[in-house]
Length: 198
Image (cartoon, rainbow, N blue to C red; front, side, top):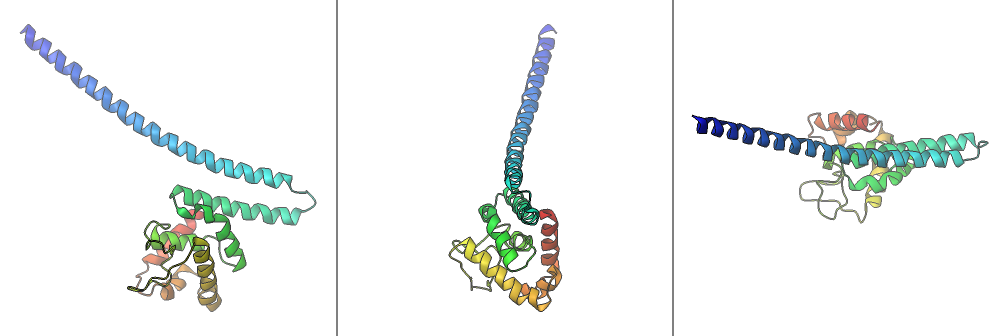
């Protein structure tokens, strides 16, 4: 009888020990994820702090220029946040995307939103194509670019000329020409990603 109680106590102690180990392991995983998230937010805050410092250095008499400078930087910061969140190679292209959006008078979020819909922000592309937008890909035909910059410039110009200038200004209208077989999911995705970048 005494041995039985001793065995039961031993099993109970082992059970409690295993339970404590599992709980500690779960907490460790959660803390690790929280540390990664904290490091990510610190980097975003560093980017925003740099923007603030640069803004403060501007001459107060240049109010109009300062406003444009801050607006451009906020758009770049938004894109960097979005690209870092999804671990995209487009992170380093944030400035260039905003520059092309300004040059072609596009919503700066449109090109990234299409890239997210078409390739998960460049995660699913033809190797070496730099084509995150599904641009000029039909069956076995794949349009390739030498760099992301070339792709961003070509697609920004193409969206402006072939869509925006022809009155196709919403994701729903763009979808009918950009990806005719879509049942509406393409426009829904692009709209969702536009909102995520705001």
